[in-house]
Image (cartoon, rainbow, N blue to C red; front, side):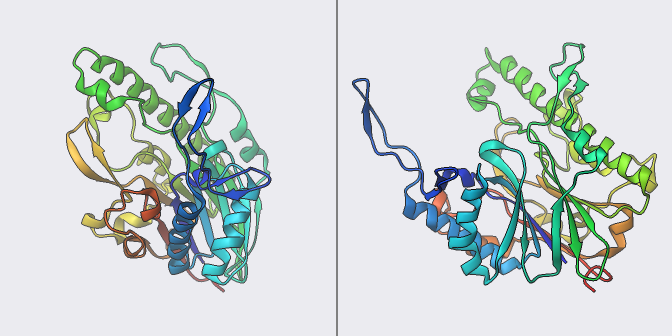
Length: 353
């Protein structure tokens, strides 16, 4: 069974209308209260072009299960993408379950006729408890306050043909983004403002990582042979940035994978051992803090539970399928599939029957 995970950059900007979806979100220049407002949004033809690039990448990867971050805000909008673009490109019908996220929603899609015969949203006590508020000091004032996930993790139980269900947990952690961050960082008089906001964002990511890891520990304590795949955009990865080195924030990927003091509970990261180091990235962004332009970053991950480790046949980052769909520099949104590359993992016998 193949699981693909992909942060598909701002799908909500392709499709508007919510329950009565239409392609594009374009609004022409218009006068408002005597002032001219410039044109905004995405024209229908550009939206369809972007969606076509995305669908062709998905078709090349042939997932049985597709996990999506930054999906559209309504199930009807995702259904428009599936019916108009994805199904024709893949030759298959798709079932979709929507999670949390508003304008950047989580989804899990199942390809009908593939090696996943069914899926359903998990509804056990531990999973429902992920919706609860917990206490954390996310702003560094030494006081605990209520906090909950920026985007509630989406937990789906998938039923592979010929095998027991696999729990798929999809995470899109809090972003590290700071509004006007680069100008704040480059201004010596305002740099500390940036540091304060950046640290709060990282503390929020850490809080979400610790809460998710507590959930995984609870599942393993209940069943040491639990079959779990965690995936998504963690907004963090290998290496130590300035804030981890100097301000002592946490690496969320390390938190989710588990502690070396409890080796029997450590989750396996199948990409690390299978992707050559120069290709071990899923996004490229300019890093103005460390002064590195077009920095390769591994932000998207798989973590498989101990019982699933031996079922991993292969895993990778879909660089080739992605790059085929980038036209020119890819600077215009419709000339690239996304700002993240998809990742995939193949789970083998007895999962595939």
